[in-house]
Length: 97
Image (cartoon, rainbow, N blue to C red; front, top):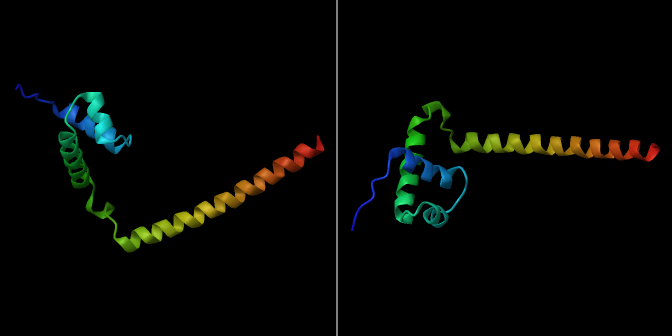
């Protein structure tokens, strides 16, 4: 049986479909006609490569991440309040017409 040799670009693109586009390995396997176990390996290698490429200071501790999540939740709540005020304002002015 002939073994297919896949280029590095092909492997990166296959991994990107799973990582960035959220496709499952079986979906990508059907699209690209590649064994899912290869896709899992390529994905793992791509994630390791991406992790190694990120600067050390970009890696956050769990407490830093929790603080960021808390801050983002507060920001989201504020944006939701603003959105509600704007909706009420629009409906108020729409009644006057």
